Image 1: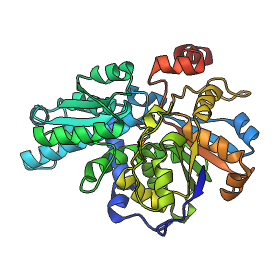
Image 2 (image 1 turned 45 degrees about the horizontal axis):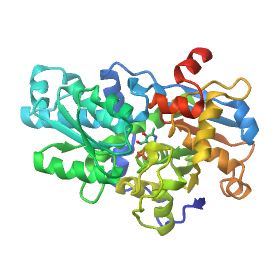
Image 3 (image 1 turned 90 degrees about the vertical axis):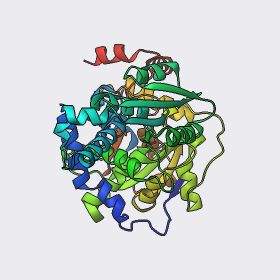
Length: 398
Ligand SMILES: Cc1ncc(COP(=O)(O)O)c(C=O)c1O
């Protein structure tokens, strides 16, 4: 399915609050946080010239988030960063002066953090980030997971000291449960999705993701002409599209949002012209993208800064994982988890569909940027779908 953005706000300037969250000043703060964590190095940007030739474009670059902060996905940037910012804000309020990120390890700030509990619902990756953020600042964390989250993913979150709560039902039900229990217990919800009246903290989470776009622009010789980014609730797509629109203005690339056909809440929202909630159906292999309701903030940004919405099928996602594991020609091996290669899957689909190719002006001059949003965050599932362990592939590649 493919749809051009025909929303009346398309290409209008971002809402001032979104511009503040996703513009350069916010990204500067994220960079300071990464320096504080001792991880100022950008993640790799890898060129796939052989695949570009096959699909008939000038260049394909993959921003590989598989190694981000040791958590295996770009999600490492959002939840942990929001937790740190919230601790700094609380400490500044309590201590009566502006506290800097570098003061997080001081006894006065740690004492304040130790009285704070951060909660979230997750498909896996976001919870890992919130739990890691809480452990860095010395706060408590409680993470709600739904029935579909694998035992391996649950264990990876618990490793950071989070208290785990299992919720019957879907991701959306775990979000509702986390919000309800937290309101009762006085915990701070750090959600990667937003809803009416709850936008500031998800805005901080999205601010954390903007560094991906900044790093990619620095690593590329010239800005891309097209960007394809996968979406669950739309947070990372909105962060990247919003940041690019703010820093490049009218020269921004065409931006395409890619979702699983089985969980296409942004596609359906774009079609309807307003946020829609889908009834959950069959689950998708693209586990991290199985969301049935868009983030309100993300939709507000994407209605302005996205140019098209599309879906890919289950076998497209598995095929792209395998293509990246066993690349053409001298293209590098990239380990992409089930949701990692979905943006690239969207490009391959659009480039080989004459209608979408023409609508997006994809041609031999197009320079494409996609994000591998996760490595093998569920190693057993990865090995099952690719027929090889990620470690073996990595060793062979190096
Ligand atoms: C690996 C991966 N890719 C993409 C996404 C989608 O991000 P969002 O929900 O912000 O659209 C997620 C969300 O958890 C993810 O874990």
